[in-house]
Length: 75
Image 1 (cartoon, one colour):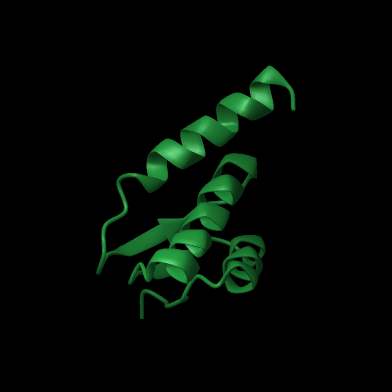
Image 2 (tube, one colour):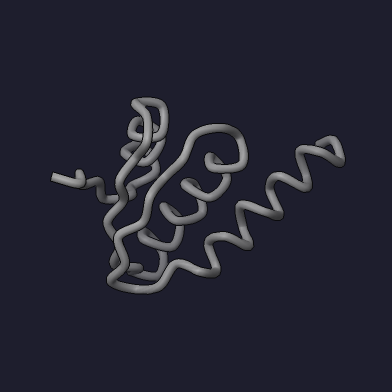
């Protein structure tokens, strides 16, 4: 992993620390957001984190769904 990719992963993981049980969170796109989405999915699966996510793109929605992150909309 390059230093740049490592930095993106660290930023994504730090962002997850701000996510608390019961929150609705927005999911962005791109590699940094992908690290965050995967980590949220892990926390949902392994720790029972209770969150809902609003993806900003179909790419984010597909990754969230495959990672086990519950999805909702703003509607």
